[in-house]
Image (cartoon, rainbow, N blue to C red):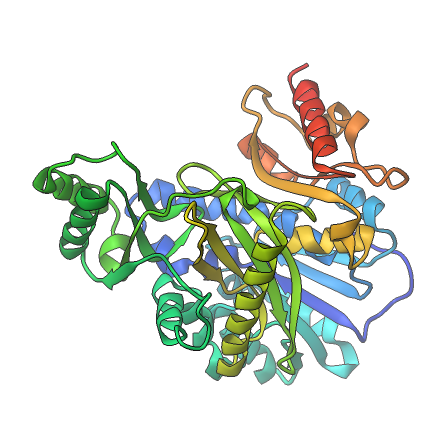
Length: 465
């Protein structure tokens, strides 16, 4: 175990929040089924690097935080983080092993287990949260309780309701909920599609749809970071059925996860990029007592192949009608989740069609790629930040032309545009670890969209000088 601490202000030993960054656990069956061992190892490593990004989820937190991650966070980056958000007590613990299943790594790490017991102190009470509620997380909570600790899990369902995470967070689960909800919530609609199993049937069904419609989307039940989603547009596949089916089959045969999980074949929706970039999104939080809180709506920024790289929040990124619709549908979904026992963060991804329809694409039943952006905005601007700032984030801006960049060198390069507390504008660097992969992770805050693009253009200029 390694440890970094940034501390000031009064001691709050009786109000300790433990946070476990367990991104890989959220999709562990998918990662385990990746055929290429090098790709699998690289995915585990990259997920671990994203750990320092999630520090920003505690931007407005006053309590003592014990933050457990598979990758270390430097004192220099911690000090930068502290300079943005004021006086806090934050301790970062790094597991001795990084298997990808961090909750199991914690159980087998005596120093971290001892640190958890010490954090509970004489009250023997801890609040434990995580990136996602995995079965491994629930097992760890049970093990801590067996040590005589009282563990509060305000952002997790009870163990018997843990099924809600994988069910509603899967492509097939949310589609089943949509089919059950047609009469109650007509706006809860998804692209026409079917659920099947096995690449033989999937390739045939997908080929028939592609030949007829010149487009098709194929999804595994629960993918990750763009993997497990194949989007085929006009011209991408042969127009003749047998050739089309053979090409799809060969593609699906490459990775074992297509054989292991249900496959969803969907109609390709022609996207209207004028509405939140074509990908509107809403995020909610269900509290322990079942209360549902709407957090924000945004546009999700994705690459052509569907890989997430950030969000965009502004008061004018979508028409009021669309914002109201996705919020209302989101509340309906939240009510269903809450009734089933789910607790914690979740979002709903939508697709805005050129035909004027708004389709539900999926739900991420965990903290999301926008949660830490939201908490950062609230810490800097307050709950009504959407009326006071325009922002967008990017988790993977490539800087391959810059070799061996340190956090200090990047910070110095970008000094002219770093976030200024007086002007309330500028760029916040949200990861040091991702620099090892030659990626810059950031959030830009500005008075309006035009100004944010000016800051981004200046960023690119500084990075290429």
